[in-house]
Amino acid sequence: MNPNTEKKISDLDDDENILNKRRIIYYLPLVSAQETIAMSGFRLVPFREESDYSNLLPRDIFQRNGTLLEIGDFKSGDFFEKMADQEIYDSLEKIKFGYFSLNPSHGQHIYGYVSSETFECFRLVEKTPDPSFEHKVSLSNGMYHFSHSLVKYYQARSAMEQRQISVVPEDFRCVDFLTIDITDANANSAMRLYNKCWGTYSLHSNYDKALLARVSIETAIKATGANKQNFIANFLDDALRLIAKTGKSSLVISTLEEKITSRKERIQKALEAGVLDLKTARDKFAHDGVQDLNHINIPFYLIWFPIYWMVKFKSEKMTENEHIRLCLFLCLLNYHPNQWQIFKISKENFRMKRSSLDIYAHYIRVLPVYLKNKRDDVVDITLKSIIKWINESDEIAS
Figure (tube, rainbow, N blue to C red):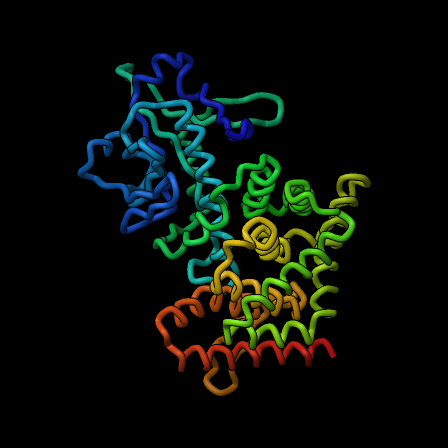
């Protein structure tokens, strides 16, 4: 158990012996599921009004169509257990990491604006017989913790009107792949920092994202034992070696491999520039106290880091699906991150064309499905579309 995951529970009850005798649920109000989504050791369960735990969800705070988080033998409505509580929030970090790696939120995303707060998970403990009891959340200003009314807290959160998302098992198919058997404390710390970078920041509190991103990279490097001076070159060499191996048995991979290797120098420069930009922004902020407005958003890091994680930690378990994702990411690097979300309007039908990031996010999901269903005709059309997109980057680079 990573000690950093232990959550402060004093806001629930001062007496742990009393707390252990009270039932609890862990509720995600902004995540809706129509069926149980099971992952390794934990699951997302739709809230059911007819259940024996429904009375634990306050009627004056939350909508009642969210999702519950459960782990192992712990079911919603069971008595509070400190170890289960820690594992719940460990699991939540894995869920967020797997979700955002496969479903990066962007301007053309079907769910619209999705952030780490979308997965905010509330402990809701059984009320005491004392009618003055009020659910609390623990806030901190950096100096001390303050117990604040859950009603008022969630009212403030709801004022942003962040929309609820409807999820299906496919949205979380990367969770187990990316997180099973990852026990290194540095790796898990890097994952948490990555999730934090998906958090909602105001216009006046966003300057530390580059700092967090760079720290997560350096923490992940420690976990891999790589040399910090040349880890990008090593990452690209590893990626190309994996692609070449799989390309021998996959027409899709071999087709994309050809497009990648012919642009290797451009891709490597893009990788090095993306990582160096984060380091420069981090150094300005950490050493000179200078805020870098160019890194309010960090799209390169948010897309690249799960790919780096996959190549360094999960290379032996990568299937054709993951290699497709790796190839499409390297193809995406033919465009500068500032161009990733630029879209055009078709002159023929006046419809919005996909941005480069939307092309990447769309095809890493659907292309494996086309291959699985043996839709060879659709695969061929898709490949032609991807190749056209890659070739168009040459006009920008020239």
